[in-house]
Length: 94
Image (tube, rainbow, N blue to C red):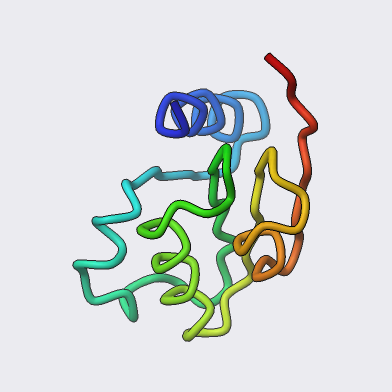
């Protein structure tokens, strides 16, 4: 799942790259006061389809505060891919 991939990313960023990191479900971003998020941070959004409604909405909320966004998806040209400042297409096949 995307959350599990986020857990791995958190481990990498904190323990290998020594960069503080946190992970949240998209619904937590949508249902919170997203203005509490840091403007100078970069936010990474994970979605296999790049079309998950809650993740797209969370990305739009973060973009409202002009923070940088990264999207990691397996769907080239998806909504999230097009919205992200830095889209990454992983081209994973089953």
